[in-house]
Length: 242
Length: 58
Image (cartoon, rainbow over all chains, first blue to last red; front, side, top):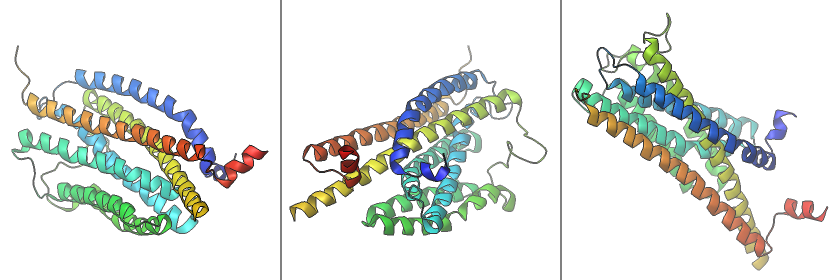
């Protein structure tokens, strides 16, 4: 089966209906195991028990950026290849990305208060992450504002490509500017600086969050395809009545 | 037994995560039910897509 055949919405619906229950089950199992390992993780020598907030904050931050990266590829799919599932993916992904970015900001603030003495600073990393959240809200608003789906898809694709500039700014903000936020400690040249007793549960939680994201994305894409079918049928009904 | 320092911030972070994740799951599930219900109502009224009619005729 060629990958282009999978682009057919009807085939996608059949494939999604088969895989979503299995992915949902795998997500529950992986979350249970990852949370168990996270609860058993030792306290950090500097952060103490608040290191457990990192098991939520770091995966949320990664997913917020990963989701915009996925939307950027989908934007190219809409503008360049006119792939039938590209704008479906972009529209379904935006609320998920917004939710995970919001979670990153909230958990970061809850970690910052005991560790930095403040919930918020206008630091380059925090500010660029807040801009990402606002970009997600902009994309969601644009989808709701423009009634014509194909016009909305093109407008959203352009905004997504422009917004992708924020991704390297978030990633390298801790290197380019003097920030309160700590530098890279997981994926860096020379290896992670985190002890395996904390790194392993962190990576397990990241895997569980990612599996949750994939499951929710497939389910949201399925909903979007059904919503477009409803719209088509209503147009047919209206034209038959007229 | 010593109480864990800053436990209120940890509980708040996990509580916020549960709220966000449960809200996402509920949104996806309720939206799926809604779209399926509307599609079923439209098909009951005899409105169907051309491709669906063609596959039914075969």
